[in-house]
Length: 391
Image 1 (spheres, rainbow, N blue to C red):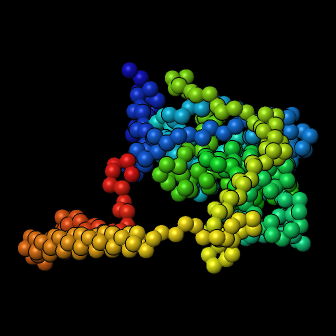
Image 2: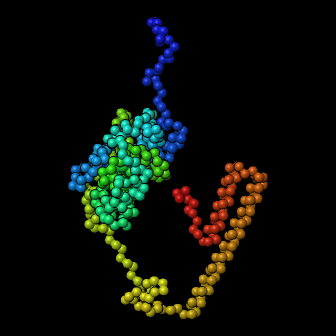
Image 3: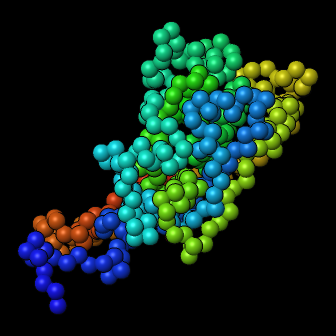
């Protein structure tokens, strides 16, 4: 056996990588609890843009000015089972992106995060801004931004959120934002929050810090709101591949359809054939168009057939009887609830004898408050909340 040199004595032997234990899937217990909330969420994959289909609108050049051309053309199978782990362990501190997927830690600076996604690092931060609180270049304001987006100098359009009132180029850019930069689900008819500002910056050629925007949205509280979808599925899958993750044992799903000429045709058809306006409701003959006003033109102002006085008296007496019966029922119900409340109070006083920090007391108090609300619902004939599990 060979002797160890003096410099080697006292040094601990570092175990080989094959003998090291695999890390647990979560960075801490809080992340494990968070996974329970996120694991069943739907993943928004994002969509690949076919550039040549938008050349005539100069959109490829607009995107190149913000170094978005390669990013927005990413097309990857989506590993939906890994996306919740990415968000569960995700943190953004000290300008570094940290998370854990498949037991492997990711700890990279934001600049590397940008490089891996083919995005430029730097530019203005627009995540928490909108058209009204943005610091504009000299001589420009929210009005000039709205003019650029709408192609109209009407000041009334400054606060417009309807995408169909944008110029056609601005509408297409808004679609790209909805699908890839600030992904959303549901309707795409309204541009809210920073979306109009992003469209303005793209049209104006103002550099946006897209990497910071994306990571700010990934780590925002909006992601953790119940029933919200998890965005950037295709981007996260592409990032894991760029970092050398072995995904061969995972099952991918195909990405969503591309954004191409088909999108343009649908948008152009919608502009040529807007939704038909609902026809006005025809006035009822013999009725006035508004309370206190005369009858609508072309309609008869003569009153309808009148009821006999005996019939009117009969109906009035029937209604009066029903109202009285209902009031009696309400009073009886309130008396029952009051008795139940008194029983609750007596039971709590005898059980706890002044103790007010026991969880059972809080539960009884909540039941008492619930009974008070039930009394209000009955008193004012309000439909109470649906008690079913689904609701």
